[in-house]
Image (cartoon, rainbow, N blue to C red; front, side, top):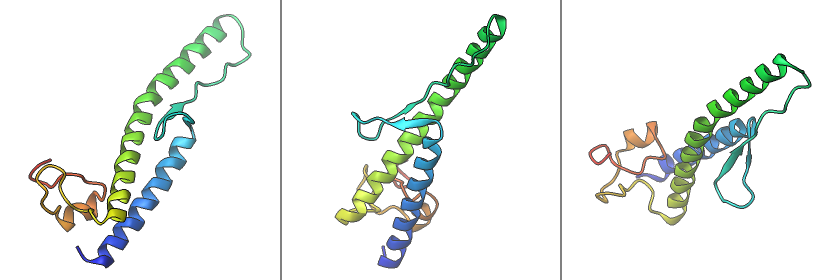
Length: 121
């Protein structure tokens, strides 16, 4: 892989990382104890009472439960991006983790955090 393309993909990965962290920050916080883990914040309770309070609580639980898989997917993407950035630093970027062959430039342009070539994916 040529250095110009590698630099472009590195910049793209860094931009994606910033974007994902920004989006995650809207509903989750970085876990201080577990590297790479984020914790979805549970919505704050409203000051309603009676049946309105129960309905509001149910809405908050639903919102929280719906955000958990979003958090998980974003965490996985961040891990893959961090892995790709580390591979760039070590000079091992663009190699399939299964067969060891080069991942096509076309694939990396579309999915720069790819860990497998098209054949092994």
